[in-house]
Length: 138
Length: 65
Image (cartoon, rainbow over all chains, first blue to last red; front, side, top):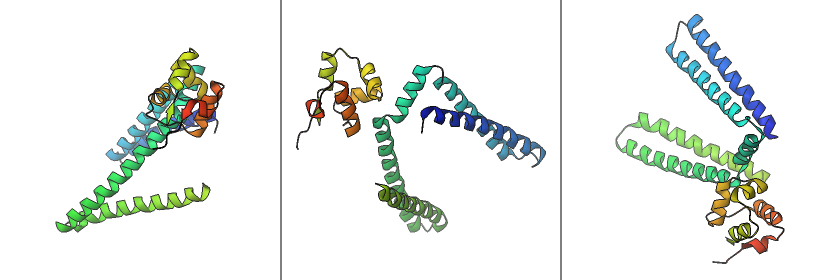
């Protein structure tokens, strides 16, 4: 996708987050009797949207900043680092979960072990499905 | 994989920034390539070779372990 199109989508998303955040806060006050959790979600959306909006204006300051950002986002070394980091995180998470589940089972804490085991299982399952889909394309 | 990027860059009086911009990577990637901490993809190797008007073999030296 063209980088300028990507930037436009980011701008639309940033504004949408902020509008959605305002709507959630209004909703929390008017419709759902001031639920604190919704206030948090609304504020989070506004702050996230504002941050993305600020980033958008920093990137689109001039042609040079746009080009630099485009290069930074498509730089093969940065992408390779991100993939390596994701691989390490995956290994640490699955191995850590396995150890935690074994320890918790030994300690008879099945109610805590079960959600950890499920989460690790779904992560590995997602990996396997993604691997299968990607391997068919390459 | 060894390379002569630093050597060629100095010969042609090109800065890391200029080379990075020309081949579409960050300056940090050029630094990593020059220090041989990172191996360029075939695409990037082509772009670097084309930039210096040389062949890939002239810039990158494959050493069998």
